[in-house]
Amino acid sequence: MTRLAGKVALVTHAGSGIGAAIARRLAAEGACVVISHTDDAEGAARLVADIIWRGGCAMAVQGDVAFWPDVRRLFEETAATFGRLDILVNDVRTIGPATEDTRRRDEINLFGAMLLSQEAIRLFGSDGGAIINLTSLARCDLAPDAAPETAIDTLTLGLARAFTSRNIRVHAIAPGALGPQEPAGIDVLDGSARSRQFVALPRRTPPDDVAKLVVDLARDRSATDARMLAAS
Image (cartoon, rainbow, N blue to C red; front, side, top):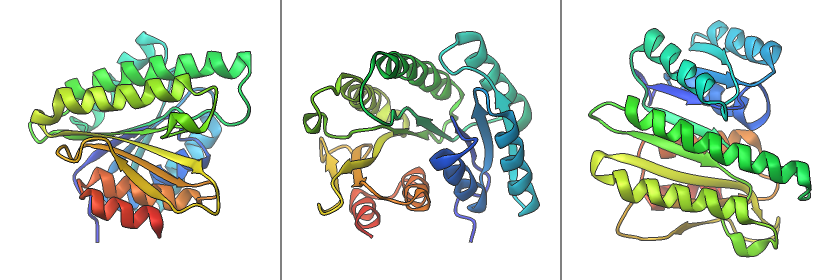
């Protein structure tokens, strides 16, 4: 069953890891996937070949998502090839302890997420679309140095509030935000708006489980369904 047949999805940092798992899952569900990578041409090419070999639809585009000309070219190539966009997955996670380098990367990732969201909203059609941000933390109070994650949460909530009337759903997923012994859950900041969902997953959540949740949110399922997926 191809639940995303006819849809087009763009996944950033998708050459390997969680991004690659998400791209594969989206393609398996019928979406055409644009794999954005910064400097992993070999990994992106292998992923595209694997998706096509399995009967899916994919292409890779190289570019720095924090560099405006590259972002513009990424969406131009998406529009030229597929004529539309329905799903944007922003991988803005930073792994490991905070350092000057990781803080700088956080800033770059945040700026890139803003540029990508802006262009995605322009390309979404009359049916709306979904923006899904993968971040390091969904609850900023769990870490002392969490300003970038707080900014992503704020961006997610702000976009959801601004564009809910256009059926643009905005979500944030935080793989690893909770300890392995704590129950997974979902924070709905405002229960009246189904697009304002922050999902926290256990620390050792497999990439495939994150990918399943991305597909579920991309299909516009309810918060209850998202909570069930996060806890499975």
